[in-house]
Image (tube, rainbow, N blue to C red; front, side, top):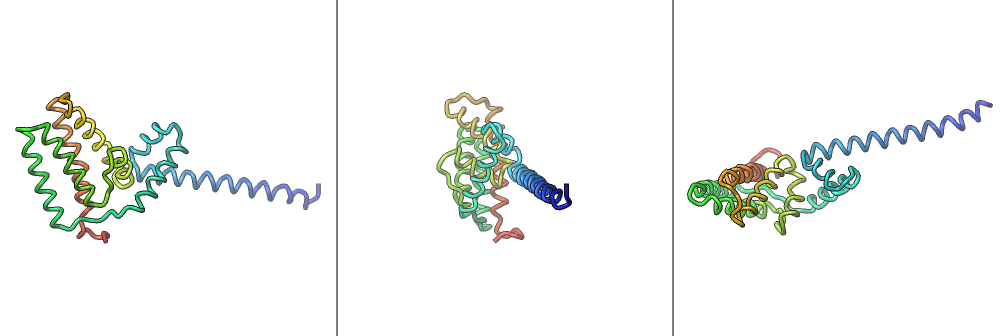
Length: 186
């Protein structure tokens, strides 16, 4: 074989291999970015979707929708008002645990709405929250499940207490992310 023939074979093979290696590296990088951004929600979505490719497409769709939302920080007065309302909800727990859990759910939804999240239903709320709050989303899911049990009077007092803790985790994160005075926020 002549040198020209060898080069005509080796160069295209090298280019194809380089393209494959680059595609694999980019895929890994995208996957790692999604895992980091969505936290436990990444694995949950993979389990629900049945494949990584389908899950990653879904997560990408969530990111695009989230970019179109007008999520805004809260002014300090609103943050203080929500913190006061949370303290009021917590103080009701001893006398009205089921009512307090329901009120906590309503307060979290109200906070989400004021921050700019659509609140058209729990599943869509979860999808929208997953983009920035994937680490605490499992708290919201657990609290919502207990709140649903509570509506039919099937939740124990310990479960209701747990729901308050779960709601508080997301509430605190939404409240602090809404800090207009925090550096880097516009």
